[in-house]
Amino acid sequence: MYTYNHKFERAASARRAKAVFFTILFHILLIGGIAYSTGVDMGKYTPEFVKNLLGMEADDAATAKVDVPKP
Image (cartoon, rainbow, N blue to C red; front, side, top):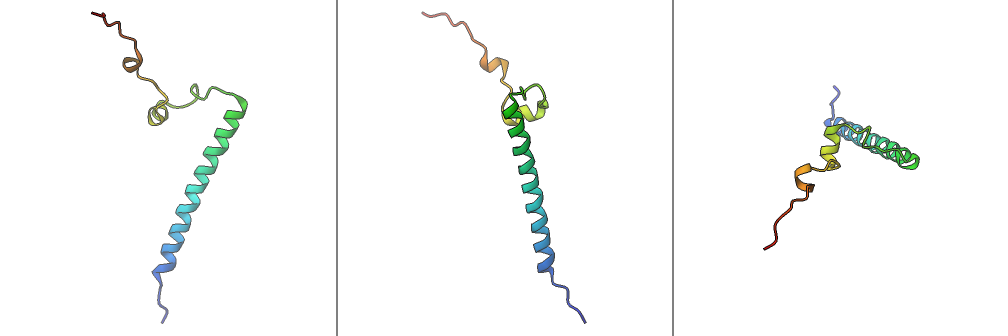
């Protein structure tokens, strides 16, 4: 009797995905703005995997100065 249209289900799924994306983006910007305006050192509170992901943590081997003898 009734036909079920999958188009509406796909549209609802897309709306939920967009809502989650914008919610996460909003909260990242909100927390970043608050942290930037207060001048807090976020490196102290940021987890190690996030530092590695963002490239905030400098490798000691890459940044170490090497004394190379000049000819």
